[in-house]
Structure formats: C-alpha cells, structure tokens
Length: 274
Image 1 (cartoon, rainbow, N blue to C red):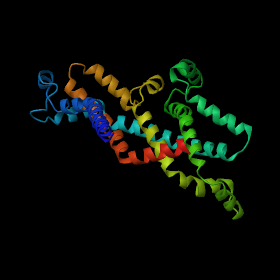
Image 2 (image 1 turned 30 degrees about the vertical axis):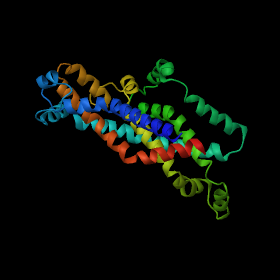
Image 3 (image 1 turned 45 degrees about the vertical axis):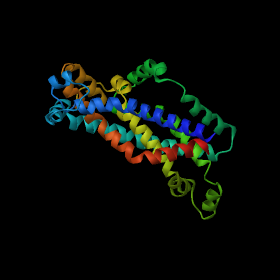
Image 4 (image 1 turned 30 degrees about the horizontal axis):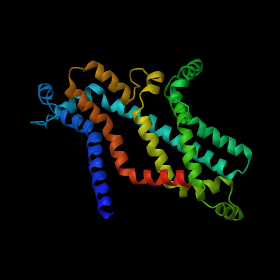
C-alpha cells in the first residue's frame, strides 16, 4: 500500500515537471531568441544565444513607441481596475447585506452574465456605442466595467459572507452611516479579495486585444497589444525584434503577478468558498 502511494507520488512529480516544461517552453523560446541575431535565430532556434544582443530591445522599444504605448495601456488599465473595484465592492456589499428577493435576482444576474461570451454581444455593443460617440478611451473603460463587474461582484459577495453582520450593527450603534460602515469597517477586511480582483482584471485588460481593436484603433491612442499586432505585421521576417518586443510587452504583468500570486490564491479561495 505504501509502495503504491510512493509510485503515484513519483508519477505525479514527473507529470508536474513535464507540464511545467510545456508551460514554460514558449517563454524560453521568446526570451532566448530575443537576444539573437536574425541569422542565429533561424539557424539555432532552440539553443542559447552565443552573444547577447541587447540592441534588439533598444530597436524594438523605438519601433513600438514604448513610452506612449505603455502610458496608454497603464492609464486604461489602472482607471478601469479602480472603477471595477469601487462599483463591484459596493454592489457586492449591497447584495449581500440586503435580504430580499431582488438582491438574489441581482446576484444571479451578475453570475449569469459571466457565462455570456463577448463575441455574442460584440456587434450590437459597438453599434450602440458608435451612435453615442463613445468609441474612445472613456467608452472602452466603461465597457471594461460592464464585462469585469460580474466576476468581481461574485468574488466580493462570497467574501462578505465571512464578515459578520454584527460589525455593521455595532457601527450603526456608534452613529456610523452606511457609507462609513462600508468604507471603514467592511472594505478594509476585503483586502485579499480586492487584491485578487485587481490582479485578475489587470492581467485581462493589459493583455486584451479584441475590445481595444474595435474601440480605439487610432494612432497615438493604441495599447500594447494593438501596437504589438502592427509590429508583427511590419516585422514578420525580423523575428529577433518581434521576440524582443513581446518580452517588453509582457514583463510588467508577469512581474506584477509573481509579486502578488499568494494574494490571488487567498482571495479566490475566500471569495469562492465562503
């Protein structure tokens, strides 16, 4: 029996290592080839670079107009995530603390909205926003709120079930308003969930291509995914520059994720289990 468990454990370790290698292989190819010359890349794609050519990154940054593009992505991502956090936490608080049939209806509506694929509403959504002259960055941020609120409300609502309502009643006795109860008592206790909501939406919005391509596909206002698409179209034969550009594009969100991965796991568990 013990020997069988040991065999299963070894097999699981081998499987885990294999899956880890499969997952990391694209990043390995991208990173190593970003330091090679064009000729070296085609001659030895899998090997390590003989000489590290950092000028690939300099040239890619210039061609990507990295400062302007990075600021566009940063502005849209930060504003969108902040708005999603504020509105979703308020909605989750109102739904969880209001004991009525309508609160259940609203909650189920948010949950059901998670199942609706963007492609099914893409054309009518763009048509409506086009008539309202909102095919711009504010319109894009508003769309991100609509698509990001469902999952965020679900996580906040689940996390708030673990916060005793007695705390609300005690704050009311002390003379606190409903807004003070939420902002000073409830919301600070939702920090793991807030970090999770922020990180999941940051990774989604930062890497999103389809929605910005329909809304803000104009020179000077493009995000990193849009610029990378044009970059690949322009440098399809210069893969060493393309790999360097991809590395530049994904570094911020990867660093952000690895710094906060513990909070993601804690927040998802708190929001989904309780």
